[in-house]
Image (cartoon, rainbow, N blue to C red):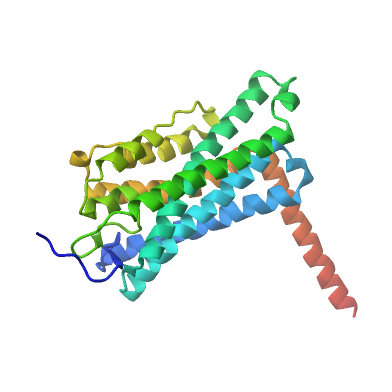
Amino acid sequence: MEMRNTTSDFILLGLFNHSTAHQVLFMMLLAIVLTSLFGNALMILLIHRDRRLHTPMYFLLSQLSLMDMMLVSTTVPKMAADYLTGNKAISRAGCGAQIFFLPTLGGGECFLLAAVAYDRCAAVCHPLRYPMLMSWQLCLRMTMSCWLLGAADGLLQAAASLSFPYCGAHEIDHFFCEAPVLVRLACADTSVFENAMYISRKKAFATCSSHVAVVGLFYGAAIFTYLRPKSHRSTNHDKVVSAFYTVFTPLLNPLIYSVRNSEVKGALKWWLGTCVNIKHQQNEAHRSR
């Protein structure tokens, strides 16, 4: 019988090794993450600053950008620190925090994408009734529900995952703690938890064409990770797929909802013009002194 590890810490084996090719991939990943953080932060700033964007749709998009920023920040900083320092240990509390935040943000984003789809469907199919169908009160309720349902999912997964006894070297062949990967190390029968987790992940929402690419990547990656039987799982596949919905999807959201949207592009041009004018006035004031 396999002996249990005396420490409660887990070891994250990571996504990259220190070969030249993987070092290049690591730098590319960091560039993508920084671009994602900048793009989502810019979306939140533009929506906050421009009164023309103070509508339910753009409020939902600002929440989507916030979730994306938090989702990236939950996994990538720890992964980068592990890669650069060589210290791949993560405490039980840290692992539980990642397991909590990932379903909270990922599940919340699933519901939020459905809310955005409802908003666009109401605007396109019932333009005259749109103010009644998508009032601010309903928008705020939908947003709060997305956060609460995601948090409930995250809390259940974190509590259940950490309740199992774990054996061996506590090595997690992943770059962050994720419930389906962690429970493989458990020294107990986890079938009840896995079945319950898979059922809670079976979400199907209709979407509009403007964000079908994001939904396809996000839902597809989540379904691939959470709905496959244990016998068909591969750690390498899991790591690659997880990178899609934790890193690449947050990059696509601001691109799709800004580059394709004339109102957001107009707000960006207005904001840049305002910044240039302020800088010009400061220079003129400095010269006149």
